[in-house]
Each structure stands twice: as structure tokens, then as C-alpha cells.
Image (spheres, helix red, strand yellow):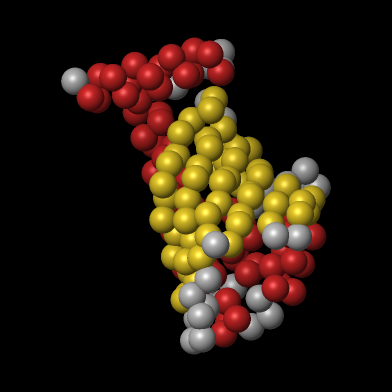
Length: 150
């Protein structure tokens, strides 16, 4: 009964927000792809590879990132900020994501709420994030990131 209710809610959301109807199968497939991208980001970060970590972000001047210093626009500036804020593997620590919510907005957009935890030698910063994922040229990419530390 719960699955029927959830499926009905998804279908109602899709009919309001998109002219293209998503099937339950497509939603599950999209979620697997997005969660896989998040897992790869963890691996890349934990390897100290900001370049690879940034591959999940939209390479566009329209990318937005909102952090403690306010909004940043553009892939290049976002990458530069990551490199400045995390200049070494030690500063990067070990990253772990917990996905709290992942919902479709339309056939090519998903909204995610999650928590991050960085484990480093002397501290363990954490916080929450909201991500707007967009399917661009057949690939799920982060188009907007709002991250705040606890």
C-alpha cells in the first residue's frame, strides 16, 4: 500500500512539473546514476583529486555554489575555491556523504538533500547540502550546490 501511495505522489509531482512523464523504473535508474556519481565524488575526494571530484559538476559559467562566503558562479571559480580551501590531501581529509532525500523535479532534474562529514587528523567538520542535479548531454551533473557547515 505504501509503495502505491509513494508511486502516486511521484506521478502527481511529475504531471505538475513536466510534460514528460517519468516511470518508476526511470526514477530508480536516475537515482542509481546520481548516487553513483556521489560515490565517485567520495572516492575522488578521498584520493586527494579535486580535478576528478569536479567532474560531477556542470562545466558552465552558470554553475552556482553557495557556501559560507556567499554565492560563487562558474565551474572554474568553484574549482579554484575548492583548491584554495583544501590545498593538500591532509586538509581534504576523508569525505563521507549521507543522502537524506533525492526526488525528481522533472525528467531532467533532481533535488537532493544530504549531509557531509570530513574526517581529518584534528577535527571532523560536517554539515548539510542541497544539490540540484540536471541531466545535461546524457550525464547527471550538479548544476547548483548549497553547502553549509554545522
